[in-house]
Image (cartoon, rainbow, N blue to C red; front, side, top):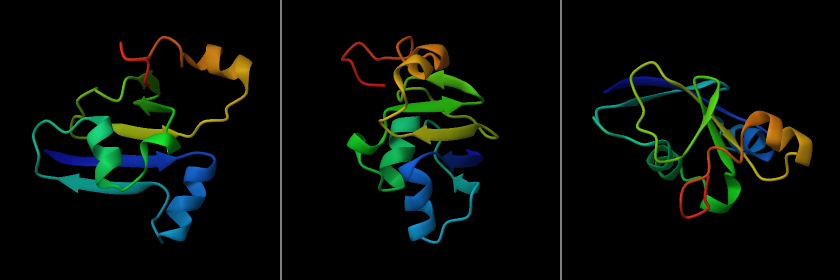
Length: 99
């Protein structure tokens, strides 16, 4: 598949630091259909620790398939209310209510 740039915000930034990961981190994969949610799982980041994901600076559902060269940023819960609306958190929700 290729290489993706991965960033983390809030407490997830500190998780990257604890694990000794650079920021941004570059993730290489041979998979052809990796989703943002699957990437989260491969990075061993819990479901509860990710409220939203930006892909190429746009908030997207975690079911979004990633492409070579994508820029992925995981956002934890706790973003203040008005920013959640402005950033599009509500538009990116999956049918089951998850981001």
